[in-house]
Length: 478
Ligand code: GLY
Ligand code: MN
Ligand code: MN
Image 1 (cartoon, rainbow, N blue to C red):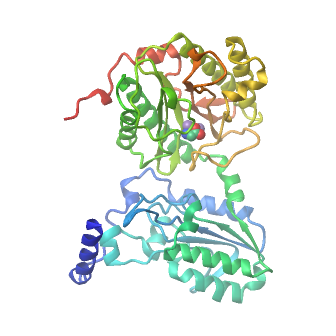
Image 2 (tube, rainbow, N blue to C red):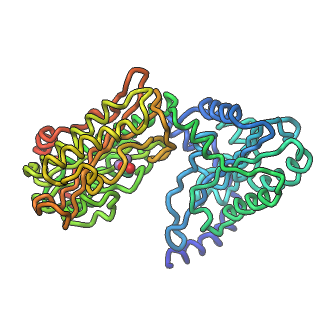
């Protein structure tokens, strides 16, 4: 509250104080200049052209940027752009934007274009508070879109120009919405999205449909630029896991290992975590997406660490499971080796032409057989009690990226079998609270697969050897 009052006071002061302020110069340090390995405008242009080539005749498509989201009072979550805007424009840093693509040339100012990007206007005061804006001119110059104007023009342009004068040319409208919970927001931008959506749907002669399936199809096969960024996210995450593994010792808290990993993600240039870090010790190792990370890690427990960074919009997803004290117990080792064998067999199924289900089917076979041998189940069909998730998902701009049916070169997926034996399970107590997942990143190639995360040890004995070393989490901080 105090912060809010101060903020408001400064805001009102600033209107006068900064009235003469010059506009921050976008030629000096636009964020993209700090990160020269962001994809170039030509990548996004190619994506727009590919999308347009897939778009049916007489169609237009609107892609909305993400909105700012409130965390509490006047504090916002860090902004993360919508995937469609990232993929099609490279506008990383600004909310309140939309891209309009059209199968036919649209009239715009004095020319015709198939693409118009609507962005926030330049505003010296707002830019002093919350950061530089490209503005329409910057958008055409820096992002290479053919046409750009301000976001306030979107609704009038769409309904008073395009759908009035050129109505006969438009039969379908594809829409890509901001991240799901935009509907809960009541800000101006959320209202704009909702109003445009409702007005389009009012017209029963227009077919309004979600653009995600078309975009999803495109996003399945990664461009070499995307593979490079996923590899950078993966390399940062390998370094993060190595430090976390070396740092682990009994009596640390779960969050200390998450902190080690998240420090390394940022140190290596990741802007965000790709998903909240999962660090679960003992009874928490059997909770698939546990992320409260408050428990003390006890001697003799297993620690499951599923942690991945996001680099320039691209995710990675890696899990290692380690013994808190550096040495697996015989039961932990038996389960670990079984999951590892399942993962090896599943990875061997990762090749072009195979079904997406093939790695999972193999992992299930190995785990069901192994659980039966260990006496944990009496019927192979009961494997589901301990292995209750799929083995793979695609990874890209989303950690759970649009899926595929058949494996093809250029796809990136995880292979992540697991066994989770919760307390109270119908087996001997010695197995309880053993949760193991091993997850790696796989790139399908023309001839097979490349394990993008191969540099991170997986074998039990290699993990034990690594744990003899110290990590950055063992440094004393005063
Ligand atoms: N980290 C989420 C998952 O493995 O799918
Ligand atoms: Mn995963
Ligand atoms: Mn994971």
